[in-house]
Image 1 (cartoon, rainbow, N blue to C red):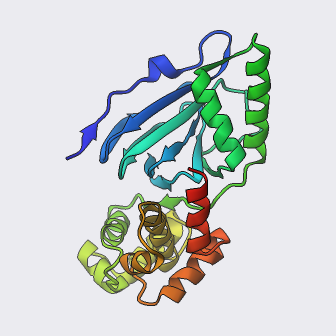
Image 2 (image 1 turned 180 degrees about the vertical axis):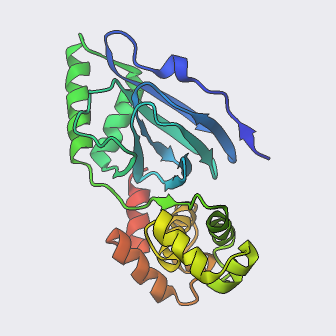
Image 3 (image 1 turned 120 degrees about the vertical axis):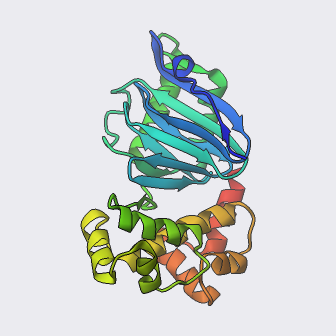
Length: 264
């Protein structure tokens, strides 16, 4: 059963004399925060669980090792695949002036994690409080130097391409051929390949590897072994999955999930 959470925009936006405000909320599995936007920049982060954040035709799976930077006035929706402990920061526009004007996934170091948790504990960082001003400066410096992570997944706007994408996402373990997916969507392989190249910027197979990587991240965070994860995202050989994961994120799945566990 899907739970729809009410929006809490009014209580979390930075008010007068506040540079950064925060939200701490524990969501149950399958919870959805409807599409909305904030007048402040937002760092969406969770100390536990995986969030699926959707912005127009793009979405991201965000586990505890990552956070999503969302510029002010960007409409977005959040779904919790399991239980999630969200610890989100809201920054007055211009506070982190070197951040991109588009959504970006950031690697959350142990230091940045603790800074977020402390800011959430304080609730609001006020401009006239010396300790709050210092904490804000350190948070902003860490955001400006954070490493971005390429785990965005774009969905074609064309309904036929979107149907192929949805089918591939819904059942990653089933290695249905590209032709079978296209036939089901009512289009030729040439048409769908053109749609992906034009609207996503990659071939379908490159896109499907990215979709499998995002699903793998969700499964690893949920506690599945590397072998079981590889199988559940459509890899018959664990070694091929490990190679794909390392080539994209710079670490083997085992090393990556160990790093996530050490941050909890």
